[in-house]
Image (cartoon, rainbow, N blue to C red; front, side):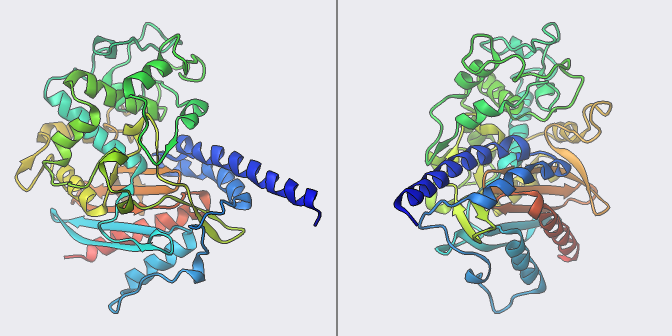
Length: 431
């Protein structure tokens, strides 16, 4: 190979890598919290990065046969099924939990928090993507219980800047619309992609980012790209920015930063001692590294830990057992072990389908789905190099949590669904 040809190939790979990273960051707009049927939209993005990715870091190592998972002497059929599923799905690690009868009846971790270096454990923290919105919902309804705002009042009554859909300027946007994805606020890819930062929290505050995004004259404002043409309240459009605006509403009306409000009102009372929205609050070595997978070269590659300004829509970090305590609180209508977070009536309202004519599945950010004949309530999530599922059966309070540190794509979505079904079936057999 000539020297010129070699240089050309290096430059080509660098350009391709940068292009792939931009596209993969955009996965959040497609994947983060989208209902299961929509996750298939990510496959074209996945195929591009899988055919050309070569990060070339020390942590890029082979998977499959080269990475034997940690085994135990008492390995069960379930353990074997999960390990094989992770290998098929090209996901380095899974931490899972089952809740039943008001308690955690099973919790286990598999695979690698840092590939080839650090095995995952039940204490490993995972970024839970849009499952974060279930916590956002509880925080918002806690603030509502405390009288901070009215669910059906114009949000401009409370905000320090005015937010209007330019296609329907006379129709107010309400907190309930923000919490049901009917506020007609659109996620704009270019702006959200450019806001990612690595190995630190975003220096941009919620208010600054949202004002720039939602108000005329803001540096990210675009009336066509940032809003849908529907009238607020009339149509369902999944919105990360809309959910983040609900979190900012909590911040404005309670006088506490949203992350601190969650710490004081949710995490501390529930004993979730190593749960946070912020990287600065956590030991980074305790957080599972987000990974992609190059199917052509059969190698994992780390994305690095990252953040963005609209953190309430997807950046909560926690472990499966800690998240299970939060889920048990919600299953038990707002209380756990004598600690009450929300009133029973508030949780009942959150579980209620808010506008059946617009969306027959949507509660207050939590939503219903059908899986293998079961009706479940919860949320899913996916972001760059992470995935999560948290659902329970309202009829009997049986719930399952899956936290993963790999990309979700059309290629592995069926496998993740099979994992979820298997754990629900296992839950039925747990005592």
